[in-house]
Length: 473
Image (cartoon, rainbow, N blue to C red; front, side):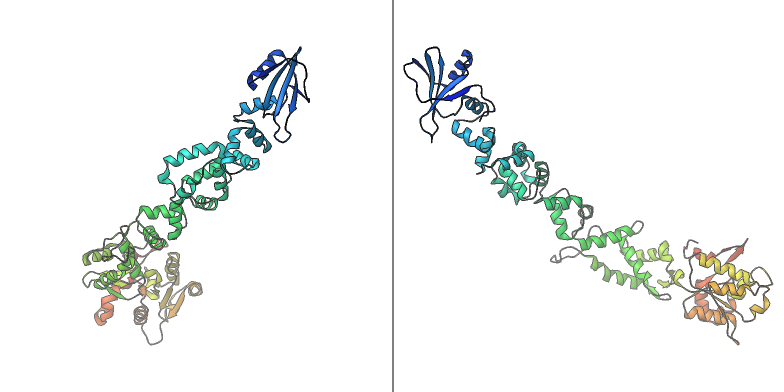
């Protein structure tokens, strides 16, 4: 019903013996009443069920009438006209459910509803105002919409149906629904989780999850580099993070050499055979294809035996693992930081002076420990302790390293060389072992590789041999 009445209505049964003027149009009738300033309207109801009414107004001795009207009040007619209702039946049916305009009511009718609450929910969440905009965007952006949505969305005919469709998928507002739908997301749960992981496209999110990727940055990096699965991505990422200065096949060969025990000689031909056997493990492309190959992201430099030669001879990191014999074309493993460092006690104690001092040994041991060499062993003649003036230093030495005296009847040099040979160790000494080279083939071949010369100057110890291994000290 209209919000407020302009007229006062009185129900009557009949009028007798008065001239009557009948109006055929309700608009003219209302205009006449307003012009005449008439406020009192009489009305009759012929049929209580149909509520068809006759309106009368008296001016002087004349009765002005408007017969057979479906509207219950003249104000209702004006309200219906102002809000687009085509007739009284639609007007009263709509107002019964709380609708104020015919357009609102019509939307609900098309959706098979007459529920004002549902309509208000659709309005407050933005679907009433957003429906036409949504239709326009769908028509222009169908290529971006997830293909499973097309049959579903084609069934939606109005704003209320769109609201029901969206709320059924968990969306509370048109704004969220539009953004999610047009970017291919199937539900609010999928949209929320994908957004948390950085995905803006539903198809990309589903593809990434199917392939095992955990977030958008992983998936984007993988796609940009031609990586197809999470398993492949993990391998790619691990190698990529280490390949700032080296190719990936160089990293693989380096790991192979690093895994070898101290003292092992690895021929270049063996390295070549290893790479030939190892690289097929990095084939990630379709195994149904006849020709398998390394992925495009896999970087290589070791294509020939000569390139392997150059790598193991010149690479800084490889040199930390051991020594390359160019003539014999093999690499001998000496991981110096993992090796035992034997100190020639007598040679170090006598350094720069005829009178030996254990303090010099302590300085060398301390320098090695400071430079991250944990396995330090001092080997000395049994007589050394009787020659030094600072024998109390021996207790300090034994607190930070092993101190071993050569067995009685065995020369300290012989015992020292034998320990280094058996345990693949290095010897800190300035002795060149010239006599031993002449009588022992192993010493002649290996002593210069494992001997670490030293200098003590102004209480500072330096080891020139470390340059050979490219060790930062």
